[in-house]
Image 1 (cartoon, one colour):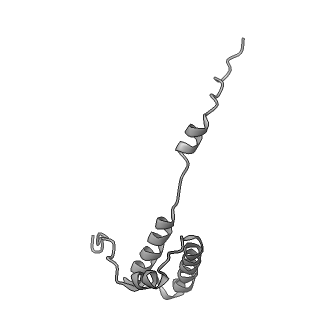
Image 2 (cartoon, rainbow, N blue to C red; image 1 turned 45 degrees about the vertical axis):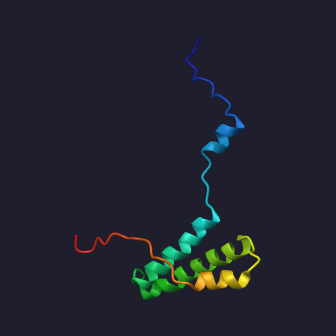
Image 3 (cartoon, rainbow, N blue to C red; image 1 turned 120 degrees about the horizontal axis):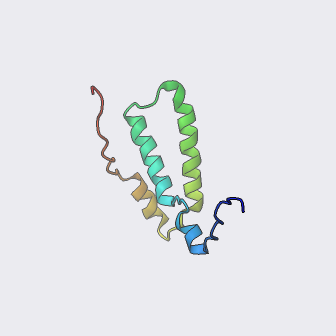
Length: 95
């Protein structure tokens, strides 16, 4: 009898979805904040700015389209304009 590889066990539905990568609206919001912080800190060269800006615009449009609408849209707009805390980034320059 020839050596055969063991048969694959069929995964249950919960096992299949358990390892499924996810991205949330909060992740898209974080992407926009990261791009903004990196831009303010001069992380991009001039020739890269338009492509970075295009990606940022697409992510923002996606987020605006799929984000749940709030009753107080005026409050939401004011909250968006309020300064947010920048994520802490370790400075590795000079190392």
